[in-house]
Image (cartoon, rainbow, N blue to C red):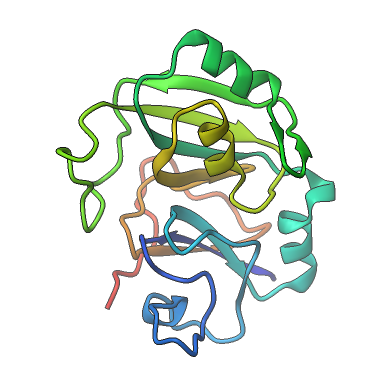
Length: 196
């Protein structure tokens, strides 16, 4: 059976296993052989990354044709008004064309652990958390969307890809799922591995 791995990628880790510039990679977090990321998450972004040993599954998850919705919690500079949120929801026109409509809402709290290193509140005294769900995956799309409406992204955490969620995974932890296996009973803890 295909194996799928849910990983909470920390800040400043590449979404690949090797790097010729000495940056942190997935190899420092997960030591399972012959698995590859389904899509990517930028070096300076955090959150859910899916990996698998099944090339067909990777394609189904990552190819834009399948339109897997991706949900992000986004800390932006300033306080977006209703007009800015409406623009994000209806779609904005970027250099590579208009974006599809998105789901967006303000959050009173992110529900996420503090980033390491944390943001400097003196440099960014006014911020707001948003939750944004998109169904496409252009390069740095969420960052470009929030900048377009005048609220640059300060922190970006992906919390869901399709039906898979980040819930219960701390930064650097991962969980294995065998697809088509019986579901885990409610209330039982996932199998996790801590960052070494």
